[in-house]
Length: 100
Image (cartoon, rainbow, N blue to C red; front, side):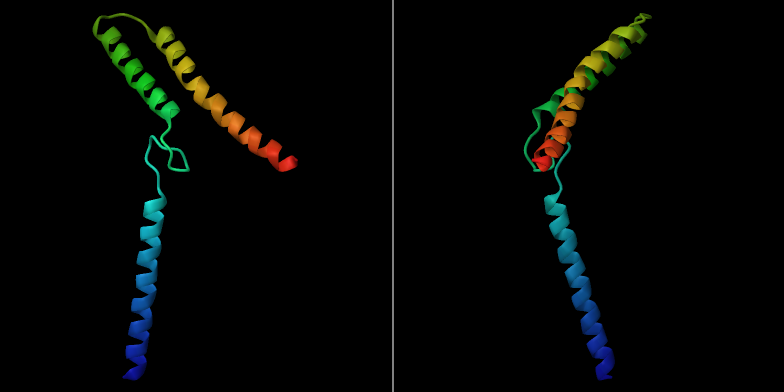
């Protein structure tokens, strides 16, 4: 009888630890418009706004029987290029700092 009580208490403690660990992980998560550190990212906001604008413009072009696909593709390339370049510089900068 005592062995089952001890095993039940041990199981309850383990479950409690798992719940606390999950709560800690949830508080460390950042939103879509935040970087890994939790800081607001204006670059992500800019890219999102550009994507929404491209979708709206393309929807309007299709409804008016216009073909703006090349322009929209150029628009999106110009909108997302800075984010890609920023990420490349961050990764390259970290590798370069580690070598020194």
